[in-house]
Length: 489
Image 1 (cartoon, rainbow, N blue to C red):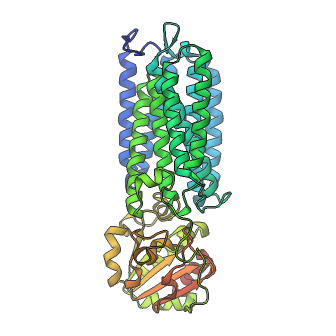
Image 2 (tube, one colour; image 1 turned 45 degrees about the horizontal axis):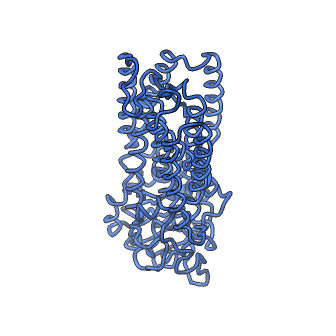
Image 3 (cartoon, rainbow, N blue to C red; image 1 turned 45 degrees about the vertical axis):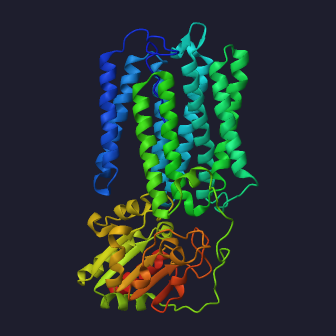
């Protein structure tokens, strides 16, 4: 995150009037940047317009950065240029090398950097308030200290929470909930202590009083970030990613108020609000309580109905690529449900090729995307777009779920939890209440997975494996689809 330092001449603290006047051209430039950011969010709401949305975001960021560099004497321009070049090279290299399967943990890692940036800016403002125009007399104004404390706290929570999310998503840490004794009491007590310390920090005067308080706020905020995310299980990680995105926005907005920077306030508020709305939508799609998730998995239990152990002794039907190709050729309507397994195998291009062959034979093919498929919002949409799958063939759950009753084949590739009927019938299941695809209503179900020994990210066995109309295609997803393509061709 590139942080803009605000106009030091414009500060309102303790009701004092602002000193100096705002340059109207600077205000106008920041306003234009804000409009571009709004257009960017609007563009990113749909795969068809996402490229345009990204361009708008880059234009808005360019305007904000250039305006800040031109109008603010904040550092040596050469040093800033070197820093931007180094960051740009690192970002470009990561973007070129990162696999789509690693996108969720990359997003979590970037969120942690945004949070850390907010913490560092807050501390810089505290240690050198005169450079930031925060002094009212000989001390920092009370309002500025409240904004500073909140910015540091939210930034620290974002950083440590994102580190845990990264560790869970990347497999460096177990995705199972880690439930600490009396965790809710600990979390509430820590949050209450941060609020009290922030109020004390605002009322304190000299550095002897304020320094221990701001250190305590920072340490406790780092701790609560860990404590809030550790109890959240793997099935809820898509919500966590969008929630941390929201936190990073609010941290930036709080720093914007501290620095008196309009661009930071607008940008942070947009990111914070959009992330919060997305988190709410994701919770609704998973039938999760929004308050429960942001409170650190409030009410989460340690296990499901089967303890996460697959029931391998149950009979199931296994088929081959040739069997699947023959039945697909006889179908009139096929609905494909992709999941994280498709992303791991990088099977989207082979899947697109299979779709083209089926359509050449006059078969109607559609894609069904669950809101929480993959490890982050929009993960499957991005993969299918990468494979040049037409946007008009991709449908959300609520738009296509009623069509499974008319489908000849439900083709499940690397998905599990989003098609698991336990979400509708097993009240002890960790995914109970989550809307899922009604694949059991299709005439035939093909289920591609590596082996019968694995379960989904939520650790729950799936009755779809054992249905009479289900044929299990046990193989690497990409290899199996490529074999089906050969048989079709």
